[in-house]
Length: 176
Image (cartoon, rainbow, N blue to C red; front, side, top):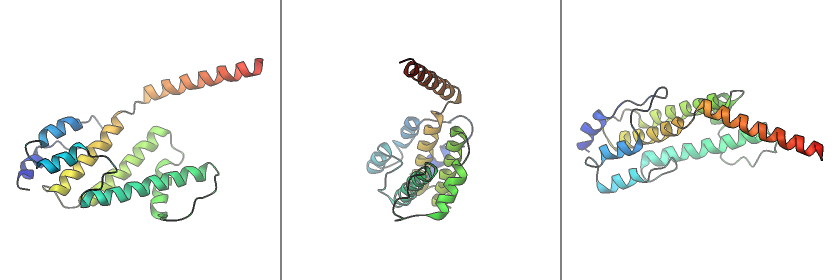
């Protein structure tokens, strides 16, 4: 654990807005000489659903609940009958509803990202130089890398392309 003091203090601060200060591959490169082989293997295979360590298990539980409540929200919005109420988290459902309700998809994704980053901060707590902080940082980096693939201009271009294709299909159907 003593090796984490240098590693954690040398990592750049992660922010939801702005450019990503490093990639996950660069992060792994920084970790290679500072963590044990077993912990490095966990970092290499880390996903947002990983649950091997206490922090990861807590995060994984939250992440599954978030996915479940997102599905519940989407089903409700689509007018589908509610699924059985096992594991319903009304507080999280309200947070999901507030995050995605009535916003454009990019803003909704940013709001969900903010919710997830707040949860990670809560789970990391006052840990700064230990395994909990390291894996919390890794999860945040994974979330932020996903955010970086969102490009509003590309998204609008793709939406326009899809709409033009649908319009052509509709026109072709009307002519038949």
